[in-house]
Amino acid sequence: LVGDDGSIRPTIFAEMSALAARTGAINLGQGFPDEDGPAIVLEAARAAIANGVNQYPPGRGIPDLLAAVAEHQERFYGLRLDPARDVLVTAGATEALAATLLALLDDPDDEVVVFEPFYDSYAAVAALAGARLVTVPLRWPGFQPDLGDLRAAVNDRTRVILVNDPHNPTGAVFTAEVRDEIVRLAERHDAVIVTDEVYEHLVFDAPHVPIATLPGAWERTLTISSAGKTFSTTGWKIGWISGPAPLVDAVLAVKQFLTYVNGSPFQPAIATGLRLGDEFFRGIGATLRAKRDLLGEGLLAAGFDVSVPSGSYFTVADAGPLGANDAAAFCRELPERAGVVAIPLTAFVTAGRRAEYATLVRFAACKRVDVLEDAASRLSALR
Ligand code: PMP
Ligand code: GLN
Image 1 (spheres, protein in one colour):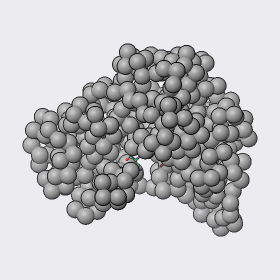
Image 2 (spheres, helix red, strand yellow):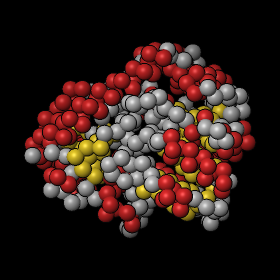
Image 3 (cartoon, helix red, strand yellow):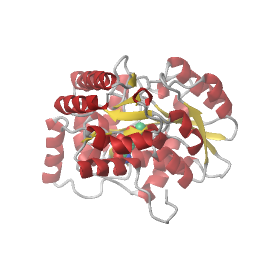
C-alpha cells in the first residue's frame, strides 16, 4: 500500500486514468462507462434531493432499498430474503468487501483464499485485516481454476473463500463444477464464502448463477453486489451485501465504524433501478456483449491473441504475438504507440506469479461504440 519512499501508492486505476488524462489517450484502463444509465434512476436521485432525503439514512440502509434488493434476489434467483435482517447497504462493493473481511478475519493464522489474478482491493483488505492470502491461479486462456489447485488451497485455517464471478479482470464465469467444488470445500472446512457478483447482469452466454443458490451454500455465503455496474453509476458508491442475518450483522458491526451510513438520496434511486423491468436487465448484457465483440475483433485485427470473456466489462488480450514480453512496459508505452490506455494483468497478481501473466493486458469494453471503433483503428497501428 505504501511505497519504499513512504508515499502512498496510487491504485493501478488511478495511475492509468491519470496516464490517459495526461496523454489524451482513449481510456480502456479503469472500468467505468462513458454514458449515463437509465434516466429514471438519475431523476429519482434528483427527486430525492429535492424532497429532503439528505440526512443520515438508517444504519442498514433505507427500508425501500433493502426491500428492493430482496425483491431482486427473489425475482432473478429465487432467493427469499428478510429485507430487515438479511441485507445491508454499503458504500459500494468496495466497502462491503472491506467490512466483510475485517469482520470475518481476526487471527494472523486465518487464511483467505482468492482466485488470482484478483481485483486489487482483495489483497489490500486481506493485508489490512492481518490475514494470510492464499491464491489459486486462473490461467490463460479460459481462466477457470484447476480443481486440484483449489482443493490444495483450502484447509481448516481457511476462514474465507473469496469468489468473484463474473470475474474481474479476466471476464471468466465459473463453471458449475467449480462453483459446486467451492461450496463442498467451504462445507468441509467450515469456511465462509464471500462472493463478489458486481457483474451479475453483465453476462453474455447464460443467466448468472449466484453461489448462494447452490445446495448447502446459503447459510455460509455472503453475496456482494453494487449499483455501479448495473446502472452505470460507479460514482454513487451504492453497494449491498446479503446473506444469513448473523453474518450480515457481523459486517454491519464493522461498517458502522467505517462509513456509518452512505448516499441517502442515491438509495431510493437505486431501489427504482432494481425494480426496472426484465428488458432493462437483458438489454445491458446484450449491449455490452456487442461491445465485447467489437473490442475483441479490434484486438485480433491489431495482432493480439484474445480470451473471449463470458461476462464483466473486460477482455484480456495477449500482447506476446506483438513482441511484448513485459505487459507493464507495453502498457506504459501504449498511449504513445497507439493512443490507448490499458492495464497489465501483472497489476492483479502477487509478486511470485507475475511471470505467468507477463504478456497479458486488460481492456475495458464499457465505452461508447464510436470510442471502441476509434480505439480499434488506433490499435491497428501496432501491427
Ligand atoms: N469488485 C469488483 C470485481 C469490481 O470490478 C469493482 C469495481 N468496480 C468493485 C468490486 C468495486 O465496486 P464499487 O465501485 O461498487 O465499490
Ligand atoms: N472496477 C473498475 C476496474 O476494475 C474500477 C475500479 C477502481 O477504480 N477502483 O477497473
